[in-house]
Image 1: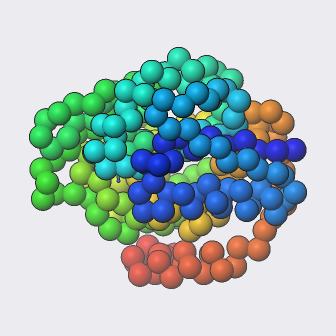
Image 2: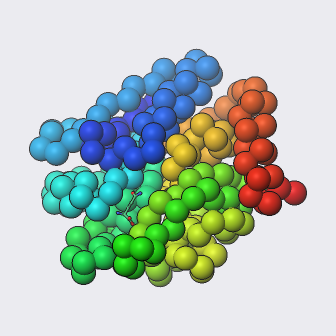
Image 3: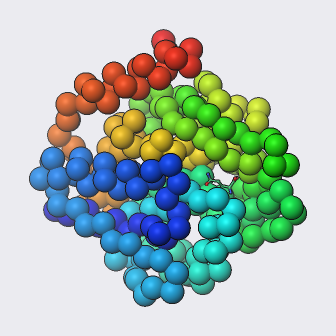
Length: 244
Ligand code: GLN
């Protein structure tokens, strides 16, 4: 069994250590005897997205988003095909925004998104950004738990039909609507950097399982010892007054 990950725009969309997400997926897969390939793809590179089980796009500031969006949109039909073929998607912050209708920056410039989902993102002025640690309650595969991360975005994402979770501390999709990210059966899109997965091993395993489903159906994952990861998360939840 193997897991094939495509990390898109690795050289431009890698804010706050998003790279750590791919490292965690690889280690957690390999500990279960599942070999893992992480390939990268940047502007102008030929890659067949459909060959992969997981499409990963990290965060990037407005500048990086404006550099990649045309290349991303040129791949729209291939991404749609990958969706139809049951590929899993992990999208962080700037990557999350680009799967919606559009992103409007603080100067009013609009970058088209892929438009796969109905949400859209508009930035407020430079002095108002959602910055800091964030705690979120989410339900994945019927299990409700708390996740922690770090957010830094000016964009306010609205019209999200199915959020990833409920904000316990921090901002999330907008300053104050209380929802965070977007999630459906095959896409997890979130403002949470951190990077996300080292701090939240349950989410990492959910992504691995979802990605493997494409070629192998349901795969039961052997539990790993996450004592240290869980302790680190508990410390942050306590600090944010979001612990049980
Ligand atoms: N440019 C976006 C914003 O500020 C995304 C930033 C990010 O990926 N951290 O809203």
